[in-house]
Image (cartoon, rainbow, N blue to C red):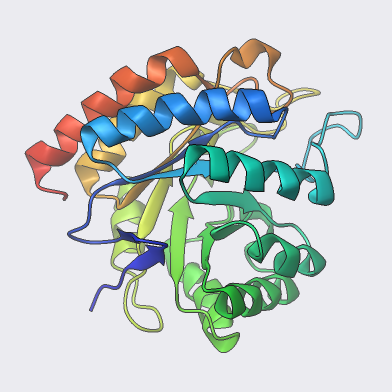
Length: 282
């Protein structure tokens, strides 16, 4: 029996409105985060799509040690608290170490496990315990190196920690060097994956899926293909959509090669809302 992921008064899952997780890759300033969040929030309200603001306080998996990582956990969580309050929406952020989970769960509504870390037992257990203690959710990104079936492991570890309020995210699979592919047969398998308590809701990451990992000193990408992937994933029936966006991606401190220009987001959201309506939510 499929289950839902609850984020405050939002339910994500089969038969529920398509949830949108969107924002800049890394926190740069409260002003910019609010600028992004307000436009996405207002468009989502118009389209009756639940919205969750996303930004990272730390990007610990940058290609270069000299790449900007973000404000760090103390300043970053304070920024996320302010942004969430000003926008009036739930928030989500990455956690990279077990020690980050409890303080993050005091502030954000969804703890996000990065794809490269999705099998790290100590991190999953800490995230599950923190989420259960604070009535939060955990979103686990499927590792680029894993099959859909192997995502039973992270879900089981979270359940062992007392957390069943879980969502899984598809963000592409390694195809040789410097390339990710999106396997839509696998996406269907992920949505039907038999896990503890039934299949978990599935989110599709339309922007990280366009990355060309390791293709140079910085990760490259094909951002022009993100709208195509988003449309296809929504038509396939995913329960949530993840989109990183920035007022000027060329100046972004992280993932400049894949973020979507903020000005294009309203049109994209209107298109995917129409697809969602036409398909009856998959």
